[in-house]
Image (cartoon, rainbow, N blue to C red; front, side, top):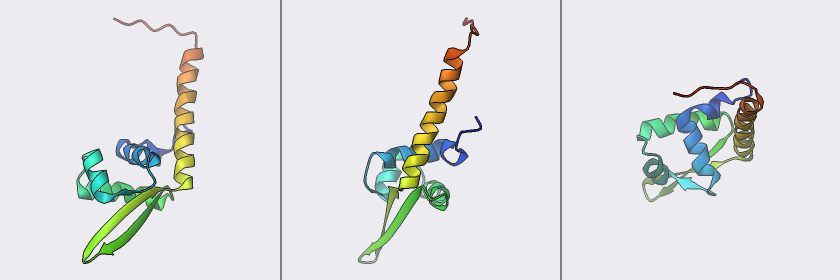
Length: 104
C-alpha cells in the first residue's frame, strides 16, 4: 500500500477525480448533483486536490452569481493513472500468491 496516493485514495476525492477524468470541465452544481455531496464537503475535498495540483478551479461571474468550474490537471490525470496502476499491482500480487483462501 506504500504506492497508494493518500490524497486520491480518500473515497470522496477518488470520486471527484474520477468524474473529472471523464470531462473537460465540470461546474459546481453538476458535481454536487453527480456526487450527492454538500457544498462544504465538495469545497473542502476540492481544496485538498487543488493544493496537491490535481484539480484546477476556475471562478467567474455571471452577473452577480459566482460560477465555479473544475478541471483535472495533467498532474491529476497522471496521479490517477498511477493510483489505478498501484491497485492493479496489489491485485496482481494476490493473484500470483499460492495462498488458498477458504470461503464459507
